[in-house]
Length: 594
Image (cartoon, rainbow, N blue to C red):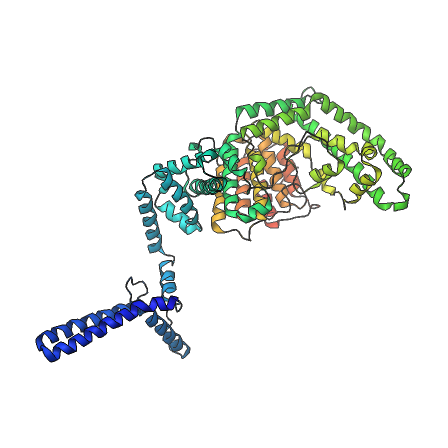
């Protein structure tokens, strides 16, 4: 049907030339002078028609053609192909046998001319807008498709669209209206517009350097948009990867600014003081006292895990017929002396209200960020409310990703409380829970959960630079698991630019807690099974940025913590995950002092 429709104009043209030929023949026999003039005009038009028909085959960029040009194109392509196969040293451009496809390839071929043409087209489009909400909405939907590659993004940058305040202002306003669903006729219209505006804003911010601080209440808007889904679960991310990536990176940059709050710093400082008051010692500053307390809690945590592991091994090595109530009671009582110090530690922590203070801090973080952190992909959370079984505790801490803030007194109580839980849960339920675990990772008892949490609290009291960096790596880890390898170049641009925006003001937040978070992050990436960032192949442009940040932050810095990191990074008993990254990290940290 399409071929018939395309043949109609050609048939009309043939009938016209036949009519003119017949007219010229009639006039030559009747009125010679008039006939000669008519024949001359007809021949001239025929020659121009033939030239226009053949021109696209000679110059594919020609904007003129006739209905017979595709036929001539097809014939010439076949002749050129046969001449090449026959030994002639002439190779035509590989443009295919379809004229439309061939001209499209020529038009879309990369080069300076196309770059300038695309930039002028974008500039004309923007300057032609009347800058009302409807135009900005239509443009927001169209912008997304123009950023499929870095080439297209560079065309926008070349035209300096980010300096066009009116365009950015209108799209920003449209983005802000997405927090009010009553402005839209239904949920589907709101979701389409909200996601389009989110992606457009992310592209303006990450590709053109637009000022994100001009957005009013960005955390609330992004949180409302994420409430409809598509940002956290793997299945949701896979269904709309571009939106999930751009929403996540834009949210991380916003979170970075929201966490730098004096109120949060005050709450984090109060929590640190409680940790320091746990085992006060004369002659030590609060940081050293808090560190000793954290390490003491980690020792009790390791003891609790060892208790659970011994019980698990005892159950697994026992025959089913031997697992009587008396046998289980005997196994549990053998470990009771080791649990007394853990119980005393937990009671002391509960008296000081450490978990309550941490819970209040977590609540303030959620309020400041409008719950945005809880909607990031790949981030885990602990909950101080409700009851938690040993099985749930094992899933929480033995999983690949642990929460950044853990209620450790509650966690310890659940671990050493396994001796009493079987009475409530039932014998068979407890045996099934412990036997379902193949093995508790040996590295778990050495993961220093409380010490790392201490550095996060210290970092929170100084602007949350390191905490946001951890959120970035946790989120990127989840996003990378849903993407083809490697990610597209425009996704790489968004990842890279978001990391730069998060870390660009590092000089203002170079505290001891922040440095320790980065040192732990580097060691996790270098070694297998060391921590929550281990066993992930982060892209090189991300890890190199991290190492460059480490180099700048430890320049001129010393102390026991840096020396500990230097010694750990050179340990031979740890399994290396990324040798190239490890080699560069060792070069940056240098040799430890004797």
